[in-house]
Amino acid sequence: MILTRRAVVAGGAGALGGLAITAPVWGAGAEALANSAQGKLRGTIEKGICAFRGIPYGGSVSAPDARFRAPPPPPSWTGVRDATVFGAPAMQAGGAMGSEPAPAEDCLFLNVWTPAADHKRRPVMFYSHGGGFTIGSGARQFQNGANLARDYDVVVVESNHRLGIFGYLYLGGLLGPEYPANPGLLDLVAALRWVNVNIAAFGGDPHNVMIFGESGGGGKTTCLYGMPSAAPFFNKASIESPIGPGNGTPEQATEFARQVVKAFGLTDPRKLLEIPADRLLAYQLGDDPSAPGTVNRGQRNNRDQLFWPIIDGTVLPELPFKTRAPAISARKPLIVGGCKDEAVFFNMGDPTAFKLDEAGLRERVGHLFSDRADAWITAFRKTRPNASPSQLLMAIETASPWRAHAVHIAEGKAAQAAAPVYSYILSYQSPNKVPNTDYPIGAPHASDIAIKFDNAVLPPGAPAFGPFSDQTPGRLQTAKNMSALWTSFARTGRPSAPGQPEWRPYTLDRRETMLIDAQCRLVSDPEGEERRFWESQPESRGGSRLTDTH
Image (cartoon, rainbow, N blue to C red; front, side, top):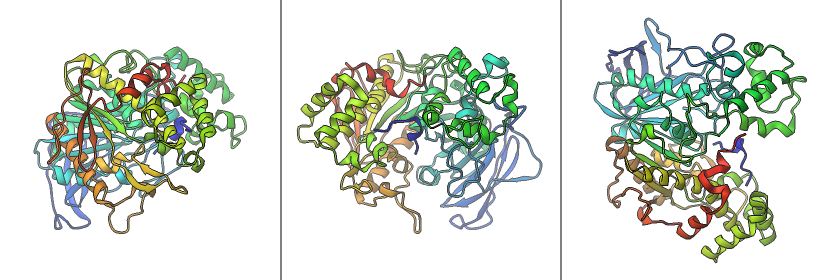
């Protein structure tokens, strides 16, 4: 598997609010009005809900004065601000997608989907997008919050926030404490603070907030779960297909910052504040600053890895779940899990991975586990005697790091014994094939996004997202089940869905795990023999292959 970091893609008090409808509730382009603490907003009514896009939750974070610093408070305005279009996503590779504006250094915008801006106290679902800590936005099609808001009477919030070099280059060791570690995580805290102050005006309950996220968003949610500054602003969490935030120290990050200064030919680190944003991004992506436009191929992926959160002792006091569940969130219920076939996603660009012979399997597992490759293959062949070499590879690459990391989190939370933790595997098997192969795609990484957002049904004319777009009854029912489980958890802290078995909390003796499908099943220790093997392997403890960024 090509498991690079870049492959992980996919206020004030007293705010008042109201709703004005100038067209039928199902009409396109109908108008919705709400009052935030910073001023009035004009959104739209679509799909039966109110959508407010591009709301600033923080001030400017661009060069030179605000770059690499904590987010300032959001600006205020007079009159009515347009909130009908998405705000700029963070600077990143790939540029704009869909209806998004171009990426920009100033990217602190969020979006709200709500049944009505009517001061009802609905559960709030605060989603952090995936893409590692280097790409993505809160505006992607399959995480649109309209269906959850309409069908389950919840409020959905998604933010853009600084990524990569802009969110995670640490200059505190060179320029002083006004440049804190992990400003990208502090952006998320600022967005949560905005929710706490303003969401009542949008029909949400500021005292019933669930944070959740997939992949990179799972890593961000894991961080928030252990951050003192975030703790007052949420009540429960769901960590989905999580990656680790990294385990770098301020000393390591400072040394790397010195290398960045040197790479740009500077002697004064403060001059980094004046470098054009596109040149900083190009450096992150592998360009040689001494010859702009020239890619240093050997550094492309390594640089991405270095612009991730560090464990600074203050913003992020410790690596969450490394040795224990974060004490600061001990009483907050948690969901954690992932997809049955995570690794398929990361191999989709290489059709040969799905046509392996025995020698090809051994070669690829050897790249991952060196002299322990035979042990991994033997262990998984014992539990999957009829699996092909490609099926064994996908199972092994899913187990370590993805399943190992999720199970490690569940075990840490269960051992804490202060609030329930619910473990799951999205097990629905899509019959669609990996492009250019006959290999069924199953339940790959990121396939849960459209499912849990109840966006499995493609609207007329919508572009199909490759193999994730199957419209079989099984997938559509799985989406109804998963979205019901997630929204009921947001409402009560106990996930449930009509017609599905009771989801009992994970315990260390039974390891209860919900297999989410068209018909869900609650099972005990579904990967028992494989789990006991991977837990004995050093590379799988705590999902280390997803947390070692230095």
